[in-house]
Image (cartoon, rainbow over all chains, first blue to last red; front, side):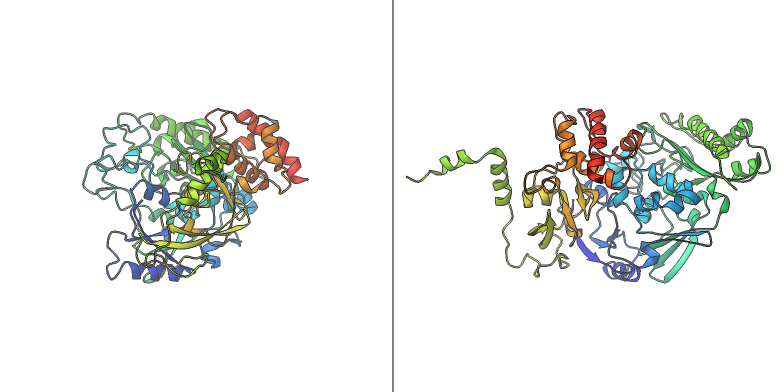
Length: 342
Length: 206
């Protein structure tokens, strides 16, 4: 690991102003700093020499309610970015009213990592592409822009089939973000020019020709809160995760499903996918195909086919397309079958 | 006749010799490269390579250590405090061997920077036994249930298992397996680990 300096922030505004100071006048410079929350991605990647910040801005001392607490008022759920994964996963109101969020968190990482990792850091976690994580591979467009992609013709079993480009096929590894995008969450941000908000769906960027730029955040932007709008029918929601081992593993394919049902008929369906795409992925065309239809194995299968329209596989990851479809079908049917008192 | 150094050496068992070696390895404080002011919050150094002074509260004892800013809590415990019960397995947050408690919460010491621990209390496997030599119920259960073979992962397993019970995630065999999945055991002592946790749970809750 390379040497670095540590600065400490006790408010989000302070974090942003320290960022502006250590970055000097050029905030667009190649990230001379990183915010340090749980550190479960950052310290790992610093040890691997993949991330090399000159300054860590330790934000764990921030206690403002926007950043550090969970609130549920009038059905609107606000999740502070420094809330730990375990805290949100075990929160009774989240478990009962937004089960897809609690499940996406509980099925991720390990108990120790969930005690450490923050929600903000989890949403921004870096890909598990082994060519990105191993500095001995020279070619990685995400790590060294313009160097090429070792995964394209390498061992790409874990890689994405949706949202890929000619420059990068690294899969977005998170689960929580898949639940957030399904629930039409908003993200609130403190930045050098004040506070702002944007749809969570606009937070992550597809790789395109610039896979090194993973989000729409500007340097110095600090996520303060995830806001999940009141969604009474979110009690009928579920996160299904399929992986190589039953626990403590990233998704090969996952689906976050939220269903508004009128008897057996779908009023509204939300379908989001994880493990198969370069970003948290919303399958809106598949949702539209279910609207007003009876949900059964046939319609679920048709929706799953639509969700993977345009999927593009490489040598080792073609299995993710049928696996992803089967995951969507199973998740839809299980969510429809949930016994929810209305 | 006084004992020669080599005679003294014979009285040291392996563990105390290792501890002496660890204490002797502490880099001496050199003026100018040592951020001044002793506090749990290290002063921001101007040079990332300079040593900084930090205090760690481990098992109720305060240790003042001159550390490189990059030092993880795991390396601080093993190499600087001399508590080698906490094990280094993968050093990448994947195996759970380094599990310790910080303010009573189980975390991975290998992904925690010592500089960020501050005034929080660190508890390691060495801090579980009572002064009279009574083992923690979880330690005793691991002995009773033979929940180990080589023993390398055991300190992490025990610290994690205590967290599992305290968090309320030891209600069933399935829950225990799920909430202990962050602790790998290459000897595959898993069934006996589950049995040990089931034995210790009522004793811990009593």
